[in-house]
Length: 301
Image 1 (tube, rainbow, N blue to C red):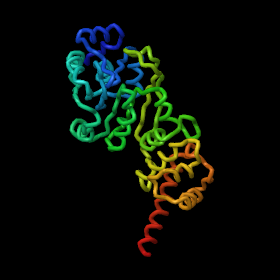
Image 2 (image 1 turned 180 degrees about the vertical axis):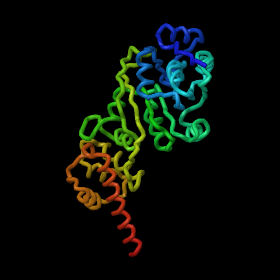
Image 3 (image 1 turned 90 degrees about the horizontal axis):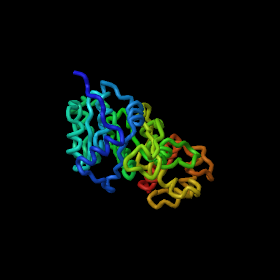
Image 4 (image 1 turned 90 degrees about the vertical axis):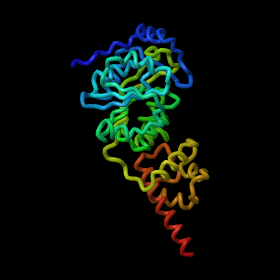
């Protein structure tokens, strides 16, 4: 049977649907609906959607992007937190037999179980036009829970996209850059101006695709590495040594930090923003080894 073609996507159609249901935007959900078919097509293209794919869409809104995804994918599971949008989605997605709508908070949904049940445990593709205030918690939550994900293609604030893909030494490079790049390889697919949305956001947006790393960097202690990274960027103007010394959650003396830096071939005056992910991993291994050696000596005494 031939698939239905997307019919949503223009300002007129979007406004008609919203007026039909008397929908009111809720600030707490950070809702901005796409009204540009070209951008919608770019998102689907960036995600590399094929007829074999099981796609999880986060925040389908009124179902505009959902239609475009469903036209290209085997199956789409759209997860929407706002219960007021469910009747609208049931209407706009009527007849799309390969779409399932779930009214739930994505942060509380067991995506691993969903992938097992609906995709045989194989990695899924995640696509989203996310509220900007919750972009980082959702993306990092997906990675940290080790959900089987092939890629995440997401609309985010342009500034956030720049930070995700930033490299060492740049003004946008920071803890988010390192956290995202530890789990994925970022690719900027498109910049999107405010006039492509209803209502218009006050900032520019971007579509970014995060492909799961195939060759993950080996780290002796993930939790410790991310503590080091956060401490390194809390005060960007400080040297790495001083940034780590001033963090009360880190159990290292100045001498131990200096020893670890020297062991990694890093000068004492280097700043955290100059380190690559691999260098943070190496520093983590050195500090972990030093700490274990000190603990062993203490136990013997």
